[in-house]
Length: 271
Image (tube, rainbow, N blue to C red):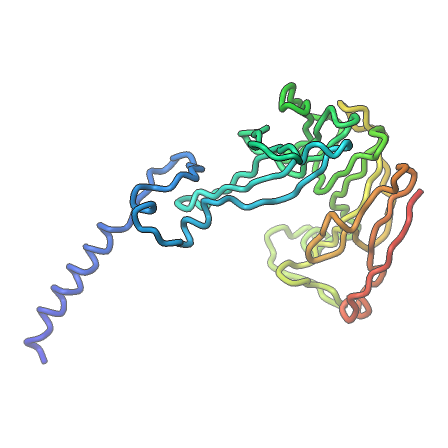
């Protein structure tokens, strides 16, 4: 048995070295490359691969202009080396033609307002606006830490959601920030892949003039319920009425065991 030990050791060392040499090494600090073009090898191969499919880009949210002539949509590109993602906004005439790219530094959740002359969207956590041709981009003030937004049909109001903390965790209650402890005496202390931190997704309504959000109001103040509901927090669960006087939203008004055992939600109206 001993006579085989040296060849085996040499083989393992050579195999390990060859594996290390083949592994691609990306220099630290290299910016992600969002390149959807096919390489010469990919074209010559003539085979659909997962890497080629990722280069198609992933379609996301869309919005039809008030006159029905143009649609906004988002495309998310992925750099497979760094696994970084970037979403940008495009527009396309509903009669056809070539798409027009409106953002290059990121943009998501586009919405028309100002009778189709302006576009609101999210960029790096900020609410931003731009003209319908992509010019005059600016950040809207008076709003932060939000997740979903929608501008009213008249364009003078906005609703948005953000997390509202209503109770303390065990660490906060006893001033033990480094302690790994949870005090659990009821459901739901965990939903899918996250622990409850006693914060809830609430809907806020506010005034909007195209530049600033003001006079925000939590329409679910004090409620230990959420809208949109977990786990997807889908923006389709909230909507303006056509005249902008009502907000319809879904919520599951249950706590504890009842919350854990039911998936039923109800629709509520806020005037």
